[in-house]
Image 1: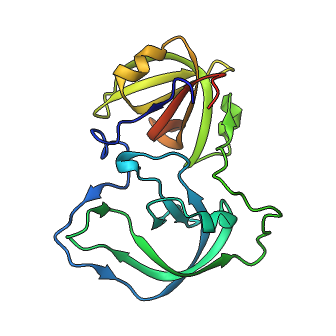
Image 2: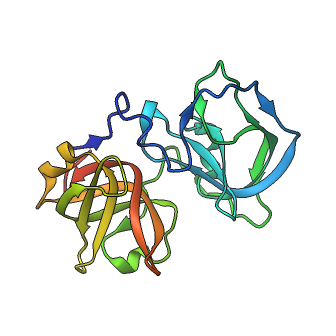
Length: 226
């Protein structure tokens, strides 16, 4: 992908994980729960982040997440973005294994949920996230991966975070903030039209709710070919 940009997984591995997840080595023995059955959406991160982590997740209706795998599982691509029922044991790895601080799920069985329609032709690779060019496109999206097309209008220090805060001007003139921005990389794109792959999240702030890009990201000049 021309002019691509990945957050450096070697030096910024902990900063570019989802907000509620961190790399950790807790002083605990493995904690394994009883077998449970859960229903939710099967989701895979479309790009790798810190430590090349690219998780496969079961996302429940209340937004809680269970980590199924640290890498995409091609045999599960028939479940991508589908509602599934999973039988398995929730667990946290022990202190001798460096791991994500999310609740893991050891899958014993997985299948489409009742009423979910299977793919006529199951995908053989991860699909691209939805494309966003204006504010209206964001309305139905929350806690999902997106590809945002816009002009990088400014990059500044983030008063609420350890890195920078980039501003992406959309086609309708609205400005979308992107947190965890490496200034040394984003500043070279100021004034350029780019496509940014990242996760969108709606944040409550001063009595209103606005969208932001959070977590790790990939940047490409608009029109570049992978």
